[in-house]
Length: 320
Image (cartoon, rainbow, N blue to C red; front, side):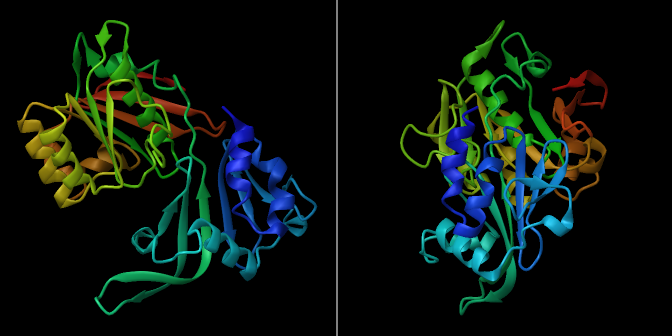
């Protein structure tokens, strides 16, 4: 992993006050989140624990030594991530986040208001959460064979709490399904990347590597995009992140009836949680997926993975 590249990529978005204290922090390979709240300490999360950004630079466990975020820090950060054009990013801001080059996503919180057309918008930003995106090549290799049989890829749903790493594992499963692994031959994979996080193709041919047989549809609503890819690209597998609403379920129903396989993710604790939900749970109780990948974060920061079949029996488990 190029932590030097990560440092250069993210350092410029901060104010001078934060930048001079943050440089060493951004070089850490275990960095996962940076949380900024107005007039409160800046908090940094790694795989194993939570720290404060020190007023002297670096990290500290002592609140009294922490750097406190100012309104000016938030203003500068918001201006830079929106490239000084709120109009250009108004759709993303309306959804409460902006995706940066590299697939990193900044969640936004502030005052909600509605424009003349009744559409939600955010202003007076008071909190931001920067989630670090990483490509961990090979992280899904240990359990990938449990998702396949000979040349068949099973309909698969990845489940994890927010920040559990489901998008990271999704990327690697896409790569393996596209390039092939062992006896499983690579297949045509169509990826619908609604939030520009999976592939992050901000420029042609740049972004995360998703395999040689992968086609990426960027910044398109999932339900619409999945049907577009089905009709235009002849995929054997369609992949998307964070599904769940009624429109997604209708698209899933149609795609499965056409014989295409699905690789999807959803926020949740485990398979039992998902089956209790409206729309997605209702559908899965009637038409279960063949594989469920449950991801849980251990205290050590490592991920504990369980692969379940459609009846909930564990086929594979281990740390990754």
